[in-house]
Image (cartoon, rainbow, N blue to C red; front, top):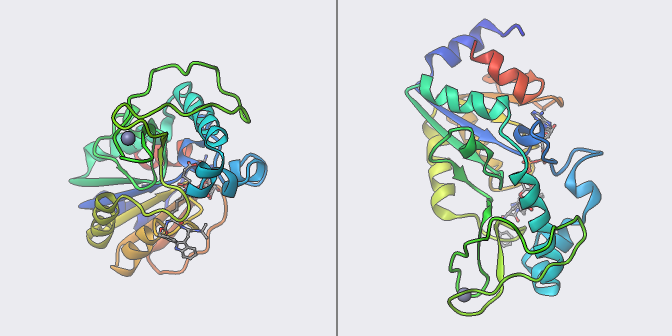
Length: 248
Ligand code: BJW
Ligand code: ZN
């Protein structure tokens, strides 16, 4: 893969890199994205019935069963060359901040540390009443399937229903992670936006802040992207191919 010389110089000289990832970085591990036309989760499932606080109140068993199905899928997959390249890049630049919208743990399993999870995690459920964290047994009592209902466990502290530890539509993002992500975006000199449609706010502000502050912004995505700024590039292709070759 041939890269623009100006872009390679930006990568080589960068002092603080922010890597901002979305579902596309995990696609090559076999985890479905949300909005890809055929394979995306939101083309098969209704987000308003599954990914809102109201959906959980209406039908906790439907929602819990669906998230257990997704958690089990994640546990059966492995990090791909895209995740590994990001962990490797962190060793080569003076400072790297990894900000992800993903609820899987593939960045951590690839060796990345201090990952800022803007949309929470499938692996950290908590009580819907008192917010106490709940430790999941490694295997669910029943093998979950796409539409199978499953009763959520009860909180050990207050008996409330345990909920998935993800951020649903209409919910606030974790304040510390969001503030750290915005601060890193405002002071970085290079931001790689990998595998995200950039339509969900406030997370989508992260690359916007970097661009406005004068950083180079590089999108890694097989789909065409609207490029506004003079310091904005698209590396068209799959993360698992583009990122390793960018490091060569
Ligand atoms: C590859 C690839 C390969 C494929 N390599 N690339 C301003 C305007 C309008 C609306 C709003 C606004 N501000 C807030 C809102 C409301 C809402 C929102 O943004 N809605 C928009 C969708 C219109 N936001 C919220 O509700 C947020 N909360 C909030 O704002 O709180 C304040 C508030 C309080 C009270 C009332 C109102 C507001 C919370 C948003 C939480 C989103 N949660 C989800 C689900 C998480 C749980 C779960 O997993 O089920 O997070 S939605 C889903 O989208 C998930 C993702 O993290 C997120 C982003 O998706 P992502 O990662 O970009 O995936 P895709 O599928 O969209 O894109 C994949 C990309 O990869 C594509 O581009 C492919 O081409 C590419 N690709 N293969 C590289 N191999
Ligand atoms: Zn509780």
